[in-house]
Length: 107
Image (cartoon, rainbow, N blue to C red):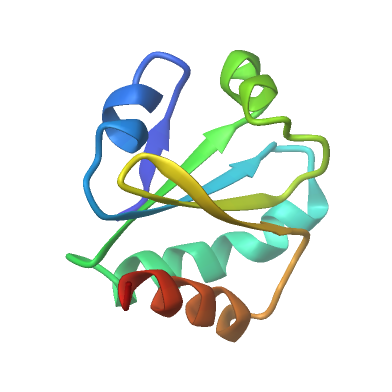
């Protein structure tokens, strides 16, 4: 299940979370964001119980998007214990994202 993030719940759902969190920064009008969306859904299912997977609409939550310097979407950020540990910009194959998640789960 993909968690819907907002400016108001970001702290609780991502920063205060122990472990690995994958955040997809996206917008409804963004074609590449729509292309990567099914991959995000698959990852949420495959990593259930290991990785929290969440999405933040940058148009509706500009405070958080600006806080993390989101200039291009889709941008995926991997957080571990509340800290940004990795960033993937643009559409990437599912395996690239999985490999990054595995790296942070192993640490």
